Image (cartoon, rainbow, N blue to C red; front, side, top):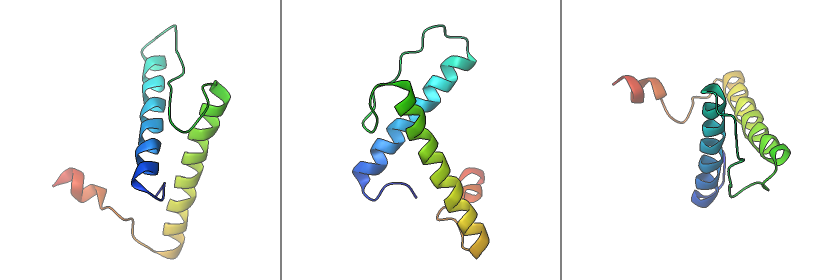
Length: 83
């Protein structure tokens, strides 16, 4: 859904993993949160937040478009996770 090539998708995965790691550090009380180095944003907080926000907006819009048109999602996650 995001990224047009395998390399793009790997970079996006790395960025979202880094965002999750920062979120996790905040939730678990870390006092020093170095911004993760990533392939798709400069090393400042504003750029990183904007990058992750763009990914999330794109995904939300894609899922809303799927719902509006009745299209199915590419992966049946319920089946993958529950079978």
